[in-house]
Image: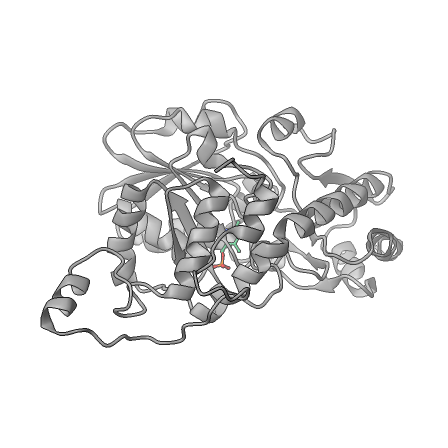
Length: 386
Ligand SMILES: *Cc1c(COP(=O)(O)O)cnc(C)c1O
């Protein structure tokens, strides 16, 4: 078969052979077996079908197959959330005394997980500034570092990690949280990364109605991950997998439109007198703009910016908005705005906030699917109240 464009794969991937155009929902948690020998075979095998839903579920499998195809992976495994996916990757491949290298700008939950439960269990993380060439590789401790974890583009200031440079690190498994890019923004596995993960709750699901995570990579790695994940228990719900499969069908169209609106908003914000900084990977002013153009096909739907006047100005902007909603997620149809310091990155130490650039005046916009100029006018009008 000729290789098809990724936009077409979004439509063809993750189908069963029933002929039904909408995915079949399999709510069953358990299947009857053909007898003792049949049960023994299923209970003792990897990812057995028609057995028990924590081990595998046909609707969830269709979602996993679709993601594997979109990421160019041999295999994928879904989880009940992005954090479920991340926690399972860490506990599947690390134990007491293991070391992780991670970039210091990360999703707040990921950071809190590595700083809290992981340290308590004797898994130590060294955080580095991944935008400095060589910083990840030089933090690796041979024989001890099990994982190198990067998020690119990253929360909340959209700094990038050089995927080719990360892939060249030998020894530990390399893990990329590609949530902000989606499979249409970048293809980490094609650059040699070992595991790519997403919070499919965001752009992939795309409608704010599925809490879901997914990890894709080589079959051997995903099978090893499954052997831990089946005990970890953060299994994906078939209802959420169904919603995310529907999300995948329109993902390329949505993400491309959102990327264009985000870039238009970013350009407009750069002209605003009360805005001191604007971040989007495809803005020419982004310090890693040429890297972004090299490794990404789309810059994503998120724009971060900083207003003068600190937290009071940020509060005033939020209060003055009439279209853009105050909520912390991203990747859905509605444009959303959040103040990372008091939401996604709350509770982190002041020096961690400072290192990450989470300042009092920082705002993060998830650009939705409303008409571009309506989004821009709403934010520009709100800025006059800053
Ligand atoms: C939301 C998010 C997560 C966590 O995903 P959940 O589905 O909320 O558990 C992890 N990484 C990134 C980049 C995210 O945006």
